[in-house]
Image (tube, rainbow, N blue to C red; front, side, top):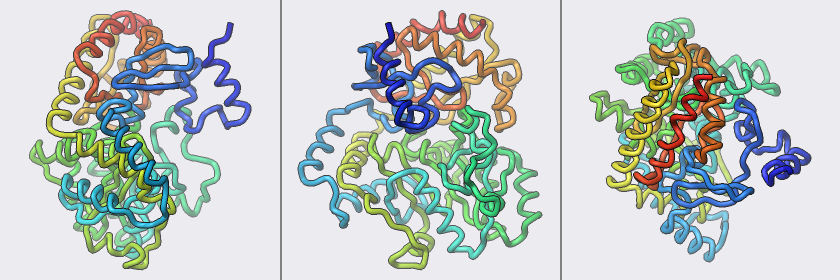
Length: 435
């Protein structure tokens, strides 16, 4: 007898390309039928068959407090009762912008948008408008949304499906993006030397989390900022995933705490600032941000930008995300990443666990045991071992990201009892990974 998940997937495939509205959800790299989630609360999700799982996806990051947090739900319901959308300014927009700016040095003004792709697209347009230059530098394996110029060596879903880029992107647009290896200082210097006075910006994930978690090498972020200043280019730090997730002030805080303060010209945010609703933002230096219309010549607009219901979710999430929440996230990440590593070692599975603040991921295989500094190394991992591990965990009631190229996320609701559920599943899953 087919399961409810099987029936829903077949139904969806008949009317939705691939049966999903975002590619990684299709379980293409791990195989099997994706779980159709019908509800979630705290650290757990429930699928269409009524099965309950410990969730380590957390909506790919936004569920910082846990799913359906009462204060967030209450804020959303109250906002919805006042009206779903106005197409006009609301008081809450400035409040959310103020909260974002207060946490991240160098962010003086903020423009709210609806998606991370919109935020990075706007940041790039701003950088080009500010510098009068066209070329953009990005790092292999970093993902900045699906706008045309950024789908080159972009990790995440592209890595999962082994696509070098995307059909439908004109060559002339792709040629404006220069892709260099991550954590490679010589390559960074070389690309500026090869294109003097032509590079508008370098865009980087503050810590890469779309090819698995690959933090910047010590000193690399500071060097990146220094090179951009020297060459007259802007530094765009993409904190859509890491912002207010890696730490209270995002990965910029992790760097500061490590003695490497880096202030980007522009910073993009998403995920956590919407608390599960579609909100994203670009922020940065006031002189650059003021180039946006209506004060400047760089155009950006959106009917749903600053949507009052979504902003209410973001405000409630950030207001609740205090020092205690981040301490719980750190405790859960420490315990879980250590337990995964211990189980894999006990089963003789070659691997490496990598961290970026409270985010982490596991790379399987002999080829990566020395550490993963870049995309080329990430591509040498044993994706088949991850597939076996993933399904063993799923069978035991633990939902992991359905791709070896994604970060794992805990929430403030992942307490000791929840973690014990995960720990109980690890030995058998490690044995499955061993093959």
